[in-house]
Length: 58
Image 1 (tube, rainbow, N blue to C red):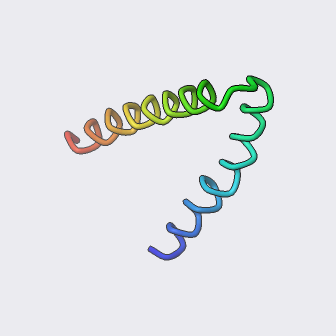
Image 2 (image 1 turned 45 degrees about the vertical axis):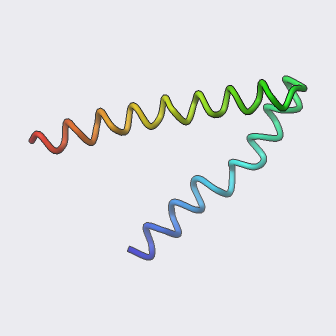
C-alpha cells in the first residue's frame, strides 16, 4: 500500500505543478487554465468510474 501511495504522488503530484504552469503560460489566463484542467479532471474521473464499474461487473 505504501508503494502505491508513493507511486501516485510521483506520477500525479510531481508533474502537476509544472504542467499547470505550462498551460497557464500558454493561455495567459488563470480562470481558463483552471477551467481546462478541472474539465480534464472530470473527464478522467468519468473514465475511471466507467472502468471501475466494468471491472466490478466481472
